[in-house]
Length: 121
Length: 111
Image 1 (tube, each protein chain N blue to C red):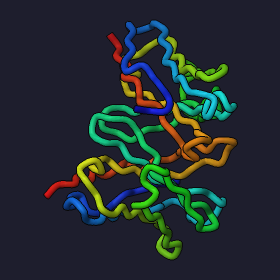
Image 2: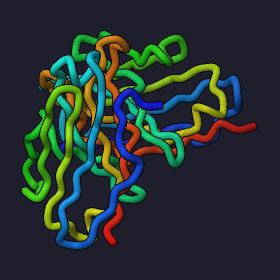
Image 3: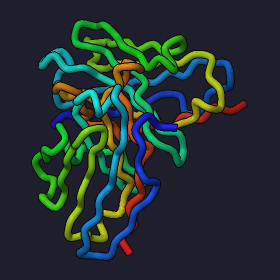
């Protein structure tokens, strides 16, 4: 059974860079041609899609975050990562990684358990 | 403000039927893009409940059903149970944003 686990800095200072890793277990990221995504949820609020990485390594980001976000993959470690630079308090959220299931409109399954990142000095 | 609009809250007594709406526009649901639904229990990650408008993954009870018409979609829950108390989110794609989009979420309270 495929499992995803987020890890990274839980506290980031304003203007610095948020860095997270999503470790994939129970299967290889390189098989199946799947797309891998990051989604976030500010405390007490709804979900926001951040971006994704396709099997060919290309990326697609939410236009609202595009200038500050980078998603990359390390297939040798079976993990992918998220970087958000120039963070502010508005970037405080639980960050989830997920696999996208290919369909006419992709859906997300499974999800990692999520990791809380707080932006504060 | 979310691109897809959901009621902030709905409620129902055990055994009753409730519906949660998800209203979009011509650039998302109205463009014939599929809608998916997720359930988020308190303190946990979302899990898919309905995919492709009306399909249930294995393990999801048939008390949950989905439909879509025009620029809106709906999630129906029949035979309401205490364990259904959770937040529910719809998800689709918006062509003007070129992004996957979620509804603002609906909190279901079982009275």
